[in-house]
Every structure is written in C-alpha cells, then in structure tokens.
Image 1 (cartoon, protein in one colour):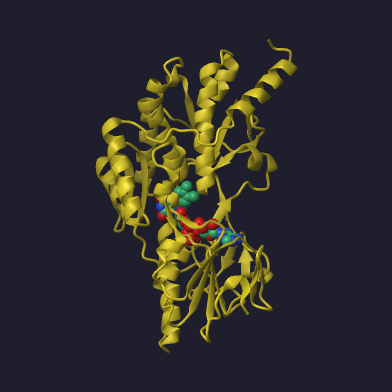
Image 2 (cartoon, helix red, strand yellow):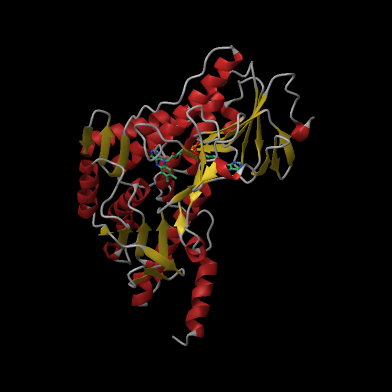
Length: 442
Ligand SMILES: Cc1cc2nc3c(=O)[nH]c(=O)nc-3n(C[C@H](O)[C@H](O)[C@H](O)COP(=O)(O)OP(=O)(O)OC[C@H]3O[C@@H](n4cnc5c(N)ncnc54)[C@H](O)[C@@H]3O)c2cc1C
C-alpha cells in the first residue's frame, strides 16, 4: 500500500500519531524510529505553544514566535513522515484512519488531539463569542480588539461607544486571568497614547466566572494574589454569575441580568477532540478512557495522550489536569514503552511528576505554585514564568525573538504587533450603518 505517497514501512510496525501538540511532539521525539515507522498527522503544519496564545491576541507577540514547523522539528529523524491533514474518522476493523486525502493503515494509533472550546451546545455562544484555542483564534481576537477600538474612536453615540468599549471575558481560569491582565496593561501603557481622541480609561474589562474564586486549580494564596492584582489593575470581577446567551450585542446571564457589549472572549470550558469510529465505551464526557499504559479502553493498539484523555490515579482521583506537562510526560512515557517493547524489555505505567502551576497577571505580577507547597508571587514569580516559557518554546529562533520582544516591551512599555492584518472593519461599519439607518436613528 502506498496511500498518500507514504513509503512502505519495510516490515516495521507503522505508528500513526494524530496531533502535533505537546503530547504528539514529545512522543515522536522520544520514539526510536529504527524500530517503527512514524506518521504524524495534524490539520496545521505547525506546533502551537498555547500558553502564549494570549500574547498574540493582545499584541505582545506575533504568531510565528509561538509556533514551530512540524516538518522542521523532525527533519533529521529517520522514517518520520508528516502529512498536513485533518482526520475525520477511524475504522478499528480495517485499522485505518480516514482523511480527506484517503485512508491510511496503522498498526498502532496514538491519539493526541487535545481539546477544543466547549460551548455546552449553545449555538449563539459558539457563533458570537471569541475562543482562544488556536493561532487563527488568537489572530482573529487581535483583529477584533483593535477594530473594535477603531470603531469606538469614531462613534459619537454614547450607548454604542459604551458597548464597543466593554469587553467581557468569560472564565476565571489561567487564560481568562492572563487575557484580562494583558488587556489592562494595553489600556494603561499603549491605548492612552494611540487613541488621544477617546478616553481609554472608560474601557471596561469584566471577568466573569460561575464560581467563587479565580484560578480555582491553583493554591489559595495564588487565587487571592490574582484577585488582588486584577483589582489593582481595574478589572471588574463578577463571581457566581453564569452567561446564558449572547447575540453579538447583548450578553444575557442566568440571573436575568444583561450587558451590552461587542466583545465576549470565551475561556469557560473545553472538551476533548474525539474522533468518530472507536467503540462507544472508549470515551466518556469528551475524553478517551485510558489505563496507565495509555491504552484506550477496549483496545491493545490504540493509545491516547494529553488533554484528550481521562486517567485517574491514587493522587489524581478526578483525573489528571489538562496542562502541558501531563501531555509532555505522557508522550515521553508512551514512546519509552514502545522502545522497550521493541527491545523485549518491560514497560512502565505513567506516573505524573507535578512541576507546579504558573500564571502571569501583568508586568512584574505573576503567581507560581511549585512542588512542596512553595508559593511565589510578584517579580520572582514573573521571572520564573518568563524563564519557563522561554525554555519550553520550540526552537532557538522563537526563544530569541520572544525574549527580545519581551525585553523591548518591558523597556518601552510598548506592544509591537497591534496591527489589523485581516481587516473586516469596512464590512462591520457598513452593517452597523445599515442597522442604524433601518432603525430610523439619524
Ligand atoms: C490559551 C491557552 C493557555 C494555556 N496555558 C497553559 C499554561 O500556562 N500552562 C500549561 O501547562 N498549560 C496551558 N494550556 C494547556 C496546554 O496548552 C495543554 O494542556 C496542551 O496543549 C495539551 O497538549 P496536547 O498534546 O494534549 O494537545 P494540543 O497541544 O492541543 O495539540 C493537539 C493537536 O492535535 C491537532 N488535532 C486535533 N484534532 C485533529 C484532527 N482531527 N486531525 C488532525 N489534527 C488534529 C491540533 O491541530 C493540535 O495541533 C493552555 C491552553 C490554552 C488553550
């Protein structure tokens, strides 16, 4: 078989990996490809360093700074093959994955597809809110933020201006906190100077959460530090409030209250990117059930790693957290097990080594929960955060460019990339004008 111009595996087992995120990348990197042929499939031809997506969305970094080309990452690896494809389905009977370019046969399948935004079945929220899961999402959000500011700058209708200048961020987890902090810094250091005809201190950034605290999965100290910092940065914090609907102009909450806003940023929930075709019992609540060898329930040759999995242990009774370190360590462990099997050696179960949690809130403001209950906040946590993120970025070019951008932003209080690269402002203004003319308002 020579589907998709793939060479024959020459008697070696073929492993198909779906997803070049943290899990897939570390699996391929660790796998001994003298023993296996590996085929990596991803809908994008790059790896995304998701923890820095919020900086792309808020003009701190450019998209290429946080992406690594997948072919380049493994060009020195023998019998490694990449195909840029979205997998549509799996046939476990014939052992094939289905793509728009045709089927590919596997001996072993590794599912590393991560998660996607979960709108809990609400079509309006899916259509009108702005999620932050992918590079296209981040670029769309950046375009939206700066176009909304342009519109706010040119309207003299007070209600329209207020709605354009109100930004609602849904979800008080790390993403919501980081976006809120970055928007506040943008307002303080950049927008005041860029928009002299608008009182940018009237910009409202509201962070809403259904629970009672920020960063619920962090320590109590970090949660309180984040709260205090965002208060000081004039972010409005709304707790115990759930969004029920949003039509693109008005957000409605479960308690019946409403908010006029042109921007709702969605950081409220995710669900695993499950691919159709495996037995029903293999997945539950949007995640693949796996054992400690990362085998998907019901299979001996289908594995899953990272965010898309559900695995409990004595320490992680409710499942492992959806963080990069879990995906990285699962990817490495699974590849080591494959390497061991090829050498006739025993395999080992997955044990997660928790390295802690980090979140940045703003300039010199961050929180760090490290192992042994060690907690840092402020400048020290900010330096730990910066060091860890530079260290884990893919490639020296990205590390260097990101470091230089941060130093530049730090010294000049500036944001380099506040450009609207794909403008839709003209269409938006025409639509808005037509709506106003239609309502008879002059
Ligand atoms: C905005 C944001 C901020 C975050 N911040 C942090 C942080 O500060 N610290 C931290 O530890 N974690 C953070 N995370 C979580 C972290 O990014 C995830 O835990 C990690 O990416 C999981 O790795 P993964 O390999 O399981 O999935 P991913 O990295 O999501 O990779 C999945 C890959 O699968 C591909 N894919 C999916 N479906 C298909 C398909 N059908 N066909 C082909 N390809 C497919 C996708 O294109 C993607 O490349 C953040 C996540 C987000 C979104």
